[in-house]
Amino acid sequence: MKASPQEIASGLDVERIRADFPILRQQAHGHPLVYLDNAATSQKPKAVIDAIVRYYERDNANIHRGVHYLSQQATEEFEAARKAVQLFLHAARPSEIIFLRGATEAINLVAQTYGRVHVGAGDEVLITAMEHHSNIVPWQMLCDEKGAKLRVAPINDHGELILEEFERLLGPRTKIVAIGHVSNALGTINPIAKIIKMAHAKNVPVLVDGAQAVPHVAVNVQELDCDFYVFSSHKLYGPTGVGILYGKQALLEAMPPYQGGGDMISSVTFEKTTYNKVPHKFEAGTPDMSGAVGLRAAIEYLNKLGMENIAAHEHELLEYATQKVSAIPGVRIVGTAKEKAGVLSFVIEGVHPHDIGTILDQEGIAIRTGHHCAQPVMERFGIDATARASFALYNTKEEVDALLRGIKKVEEVFA
Ligand code: PLP
View 1 (cartoon, rainbow, N blue to C red):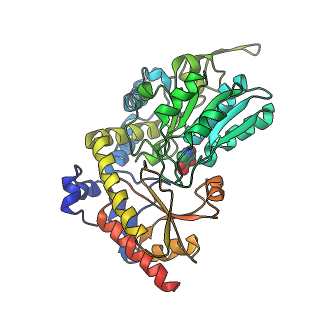
View 2: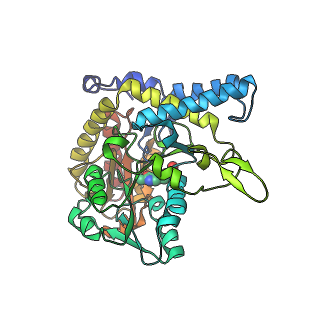
View 3: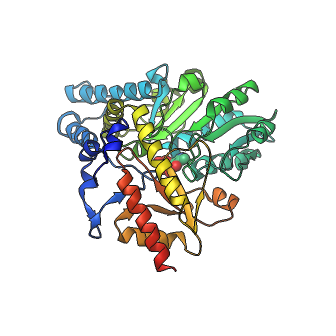
C-alpha cells in the first residue's frame, strides 16, 4: 500500500522502505497484504535476505576451530556481527554479547546459571504482571527447584506498572528483578531506567526482556545500567533462530556455564574440564552463523534509517490508530498506558477475538488473536484474549485505514 506524503514528511520514506521488503508485495485472499503482526515476528528486508545468501555462497564454514581460509572468513563474519550488536546496544565490550537462539533461551540461561547460584530457599524473584510467558516460566521453574518465591508487581487499569508497589516488593530476599522493557500484549513501555535505579539502590540486579523494545526504541545498556538485556533477532527484521544475551562482563565471568559442548571449553579430560572465557563459555556447539550475519545486516539497515525516525513514524501510526479505533462504538482498547510502543490490543463487544482475526484475514489483514503468551495479563483484565495489531517501520496510515474498515465489517457481520 502506498505511503502518504505525511509519512515521508515524518522522516521515513515509507514507500521506498516498503520496496525493500519483497514479502509485502503480495496479495492475501485477493487483497493487498496488510501485515500487522509485527510483534510476533517482523518481515525481512532484502538486505538481510541477501546477506544470508551471500554468507552461504561465499563464507560458510564452521567457526573458531579451523585454520583454513573459509573458517577464518566465517569467524570474521560472526565476530563482526557480535561487534554490530555491541554497538547497537551500546555495550562496553563485544565479549558481553552472547549469541543464543532467542530471547527465551537468553532468559532461561540467566535463570539457570545466575539464578541457580544466587537464588536459594526463601529468596525471591521479582517480575511484573505484564510479562510474556518467557519471562515468567523460567523464573517459576527456578523458584520451584530452589524453594524460592516468585513475587509479581501489579499493574493498573491502563496496563502501567504500579511503581510504589514494585518498590514495596523489592525486599531483602529479592535476588533478581526480571522485567519487560515493552509489553507485547499491551504495548506499555516500562520506565526501566527508574526501575533499575530502584533495584540497584537495594543491590538487586535487573534482567530486561527487550524482545518488544529493540525494534522500536534506541537502547543503551550502559546508560540504563541494566545487568542483563535480552532480545530476539526475528522481531528486529533479522532471521529466526538467533537471539542475544547482553550481560555485564563481571557477572558473566562469575556465572557457571549453561550448556556443555564444543567451543565452550579451554581443555577437556575425563577428570576435569576448564571453561573458555566469555562470551564463548556460553556458546556451546555450532552457533547459527548465517543468522548472526543476517542480524548484523538488519542492524545496519536500521542504523541507516535511524531508530529515532523509526520511533517517530511508529508513534504517529499508533496515535492515529488509537484515536480512530477508540472512536468506533463497541470497541475497547486493552492497554492505554501513557507510554506505549507498537501495539494496539482491542476487543469488540460480543465478538470473539478469533472471529475478528478470521474476518480481517479474509480482507488480507494479518493481526494476532489470543492471549499473546501473556495469560496473566488477560486474567488481570478479565478477558480470555484480545485482537492485536502491531506496527512496524513499513506500515502506513492507509493500512490502519484498512484495519478500520475491517473492524467495521466485523461489526456488521455480528450486528
Ligand atoms: N519476551 C517478549 C516480551 C516477547 O514478546 C516474546 C515473543 O513474543 C519473547 C519474550 C520471546 O521471544 P522468542 O520467542 O523469540 O524467544
